[in-house]
Length: 181
Length: 249
Image (tube, rainbow over all chains, first blue to last red; front, side):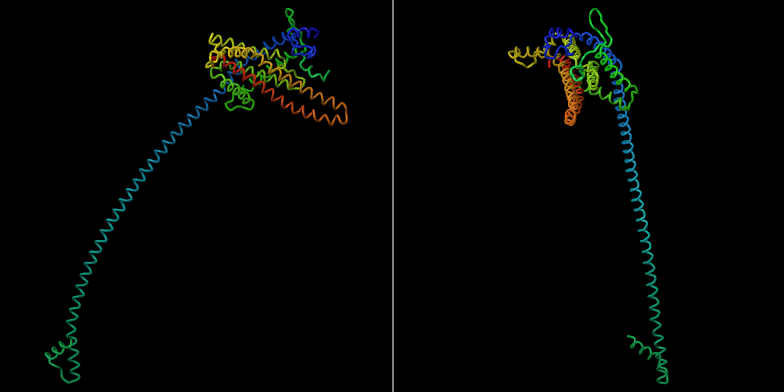
């Protein structure tokens, strides 16, 4: 280390400020440091360039490719799903329309059927009503015609009881007619 | 003297080698260069040996370092800059690991020697200059004449640009070297205070708490500086490489 001061002055660095032994400015060590730096850094560069950097770059690229591939696959599956959903929706809409048609057809048919039956029933009832009315009218006229006879009989019987002799038929009819009107 | 803050930077010959009157001894500095390279290479290679699609913890550290440097290079020099990626990545890892190794007690800090940082800076400088001239020929010198500057001003601007270009390796190397050197000296000085104060006994021991807390704080700061200086060195390298790729700003 005796030559340190000499070397430092050669470099133009004030040696006395740091003392003779300020190691970073000791030029005697430079050759060794430069050689070993060249060897070690050169080797390091070689390793980085040929092993480490390509390997890490490969890993990152694989991952990027894988992610891109997975995303592509996911997109494809999503498109498929969307298509399936659209097809399902369409089928559903069709089925709904069809069901609607069937329902309205059925409803119209049932309504027509019911209407026909109702009309038929009404016609039947009207017919029966007419017959019944005719029947009632018949019975009524018959009953009315018989009322005269019954009244005549009753009256002649009452007169006989009261007066001792039956009235004549003409008198009776005359009296009845005037009473009943 | 154990308290001498400079002694930690002393180069000690471990295996003397001398070729043609030049000293190429294997020293403690050489040992730590080898250790730096071995540790960084081993980590990067073994952590990625699984080539996991889903990275393990150590693998993601290597990937982060890669992405970090790649992002830096791509943002300052563009995609063409990626051709220099192995160099930039090697510089970053070497400087970072060397700086961090320096944080271990009794370890030697490779980057605290100006010759080492200057050699790395010259490597960058020569790469930029040689590649720039090879690729762009005389157009590379447009670097010194930014477009849009009036010709009169060019008389002033061009020399300034030349000087700033030539001073790059100096500023690049001195920044790293001085930061590492100053940090380690500060750390050593404060740690030395603890020893000398507590040797006084009584009040000294109580008082030594102050430099102790300073030492702890500076240690944390130095870890930050170790990373930051590796980052700064790399980011400036990227910007200089951008000049080689796109000299006409």
